[in-house]
Amino acid sequence: MSRSFCQLACGAIAVISIIGWTGPLTAESTLTIEQLTLHKVSATAGSHQGRTGIRIVEPGSPTLNEDKLAILPTAGFVDGSIEGWVNGAKRADAAAAARGFVGMAFHINEDASAFEAVYLRPTNGRADDQLQRNHTVQYFVFPEYPWHRLRAESPGKYETYADIAPDTWIHFRLAIKGGTVRLFLNKSEYPSFVVTDLLAEPASGRLGFWIGPGTEAWFSDIKVVPNH
Image (cartoon, rainbow, N blue to C red):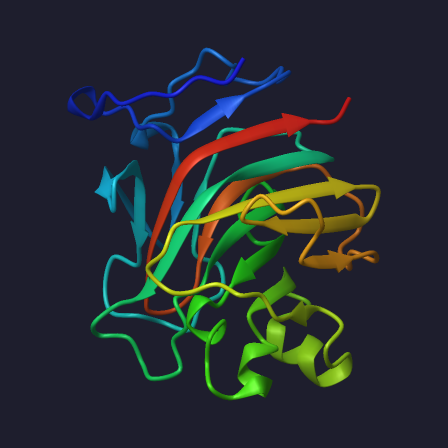
């Protein structure tokens, strides 16, 4: 049922397929930039390191806002899997603390004022400092549980290490079911990261591409399979 697209001239992008979806997108849909709801980001279709996809950046200078989203027209998502390829790197004008933050948001509410997300800090994956390596993958809830609150109150529980690198295509799969999320990286059989007590109230909502401060991110060949 999966289908790949490369029709950049007419605005379509080789990014997403939907399997078993009852919303506005189906397995035969071609996502366009116009179908994304851009929240504090800009988006363009293009090619990077041999893959076609969507480039997501902040439209101006980097800010510390955590709600930077390109939202997919996937209302009603509760449980299921989201997989594909991401690439995150620091922008040239990024602060020293930038890490190429890139990930997926889920259960995004109507006005994007609340959501959950799992994201990567690619520059941490092969840092010389082991403590920094331990902060490579992160779960958080906007706005109640930002990363720094979770690190202070539950150190090590909502973040972990993964062997990844910046400006490199990374395959990911998020499996969300019944208050648990598992992250599988680079097609591993076993999860790199598990959260068994999602901190937001059970909800449905949209999915979105998420970036952090000072990031140039790419998303490619995203496949969504909702549970029924």
